Image (cartoon, rainbow, N blue to C red; front, top):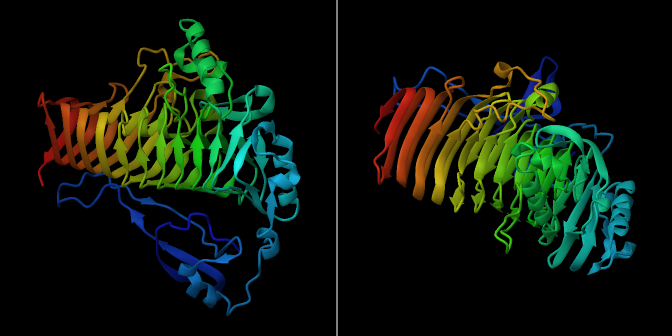
Amino acid sequence: MRLLKHKKRFFASLVTDQDAAGPSVGCLIPSLLIFKPWHQLVAGAAPSFPVFLSFSYKLKLVRRGRLIPSLLVSILCLSLFSCEQPADTKTASSETATYLITAYGAVGDSVTVNTEAIQQAIDACAENGGGTVQIPKGVFSSGAIFLKEGVTLEVQEGAKLRAVAGLENFPELKNTRIAGIEMDWPSAFINIIDASHVTITGDGTIDGSGYYWWEPYWQKRDSLTGKVPGDLIDWHVPRPRLMLFQNTSECTLENVKLRNSGFWTVHICYSHDIDVTNVNIVNPVLESGKRAASSDGIDVDSSHDIAIRDCYIACDDDCIAVKSGRGSDGLRINIPTENVLIENCTFGSGHGGVSMGTETAGGIKNVLVKNCVADGNQAPIKFKPRPGRGGVIENITHEGWKVKNVKTVIDYALRNVDGSDYIDEWQEIKVPFEKATPRYRNLTIRDVEATDARTAISFLGWPLAHAENVILENVNIQAASGATFQYVDNLLLKNVTVTSDDNKMEFQEVTHKIEAE
């Protein structure tokens, strides 16, 4: 068996499941912690909308042939029973086999294009039951590669796996999702599609050579200004994502450095049980002053049971964006994003630290953002509702933020309400306005310390789509400008302190309650 990749999930204890037939062999069920976004407030102060987030995880007991020490007692107990192994369990010998790409002809001279050699190593690894494909020290240039079931890609210290230029090196994928719409699009640099139990690890670097793609994007954008709605320009400039997890499960991305993505850096789409741990993502400012366009750090898109921990992200868009499709196409697919944990991450430059939206048609729920740091980010706690996108966004909890040198600490704004974003897909109106309007509710933000902000809180709903059931608790912000709340139903402020030059604390069309400690 395997240990589910979320090896650090919150297991409170292990109990034996019993049914009428007695103990169920091998069925250890985790007793899960329950996250309570609407925390136990002072008696009488709690709003009448308690919501409980509970994450459900399967427990498996061996990962890649290695016993997990913390579960050893449970494993020993299981050994007393006759436990049938899954039919697809790999042998220890196959899982420890290594495949060095240089043995397949790869050359780390930065010039040789090694796509075929690297793919041959991956294919051989998969055909022999799995194992590790190693990228040794050197600069190995390549086009798109496709990882397969049971393969670990190890980018060793001193190694750089670098993307080459030219769309011809990135075969077109059919019906992959881009900016909320399924379409044909160039493959990513590293693709994990319809394959489970894949790991990407190592202390080396994966470089998307974004400088091949950024300047052409800005040139195309400038030429399309006034001709194409700004939000559709991405679709007119095809370029590869750095990494795509699509229709995958039980995969791990850990320890590597990701640099210079031409488009989104890590896209997790239609997938579940994915761990991203200790990954360093940087997509920098160009010498011209124009940035790495649409270079989101991590996009969680219509996926569930995702854990992102201990990462550093600096880019030219949202560091982490939680999405689920847009407009009619998102409503057609109708897959939510749910059960997401983001913990102990640090966010540098970026439009947002953790953003919810703007692609929300399938819905977003049960997201916990915990103990994160932002320095130099535009809006670390960001909600991006837009008309035309649809969906319900609910049960979102932020807690334990340390923030400094940001534009807006808490930013909620319904954008493009003039109708410019109602256009769905390729400029054809398809979704009735009332169905396409996103609804945000049950939002909790607690234990936030922020200094050197331009604006403390900008929470701007919309007359036709109020935010509902919002709690801010133990929030302390120092900023040049204070707080504004508009169009919020059932707002609770508990022990919220905003120190600002303008002493602003404004409410418009808000039902609210303010409590001291």
